[in-house]
Image (tube, rainbow, N blue to C red; front, side, top):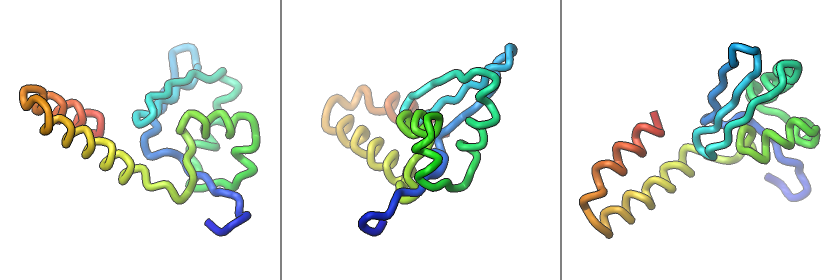
Length: 116
């Protein structure tokens, strides 16, 4: 990004969404661990933001956009989330092999389960 240029945003690849029986949209970001429920009347605006391929800084300046970005549902366009998670879990795997090998297989199983 050039100096002075405002960031562009995209939905996180780790966003998962569903709706409760009562109509409340739930969003979970499996990377950050954020889980949020939104009022039914907020559903269209929230879904519009997290389904876009890209949005300009103005959508994050908006209160709902800022809320979603703060919790990791929207990330800057230049962020490589897959690289981030590979790095984070690579560090965890390395730390596990350096310590007790008895915890090694379960940690790998848990990490793979989160990625899938």
